[in-house]
Amino acid sequence: MNVKQYPAVVIHSLAEARKVLAFRQPVTLLSPRGAALFAGALWWQALLKRLREECPQILIHDFLDCADASGLALGALRIGQRSIVLDPSAPGWASVAAIAASLGAEVLTVPPPALDMSDPGDVRRLQDWLQVQTAPSDSGNTVS
Image 1 (cartoon, rainbow, N blue to C red):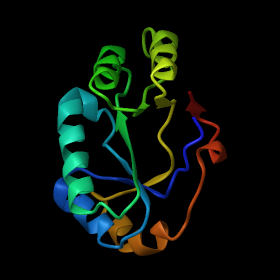
Image 2 (image 1 turned 180 degrees about the horizontal axis):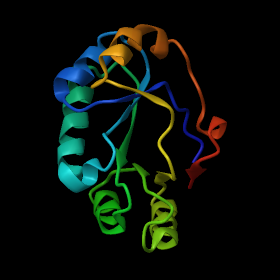
Image 3 (image 1 turned 135 degrees about the vertical axis):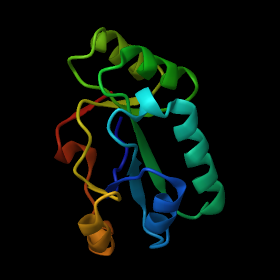
Image 4 (image 1 turned 60 degrees about the vertical axis):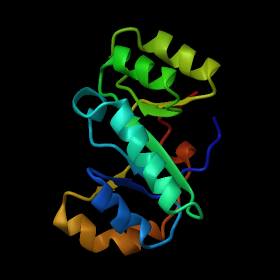
């Protein structure tokens, strides 16, 4: 998939996401590592739906991190998640990638470089970080 990827930021909550979107810049929002295991795909989709309703003018690309949980990755794809991170050592990874491709979904083997909103140092760097734009091809970790 040739989707433009904007500066990536790991968010842990609605409040953190709102801080990111307050800059009114296109952004890639990443769930925390393994969020599909502890928060679930429905939480992530509800969070993104709310953000897109609150800020319809801001381009938001998002990835749900599924760690090595192939089953949860498939569940996320089934309910409409179109961008996931799945560790290449996950059982059945090739099958998940094939299913994702058939749905027009994007699978990354590692998340893109990102600021983490739980890190106070990164929060202070947020404005500068959002000024940088990269493409998925920069990392070489995109599979579609």
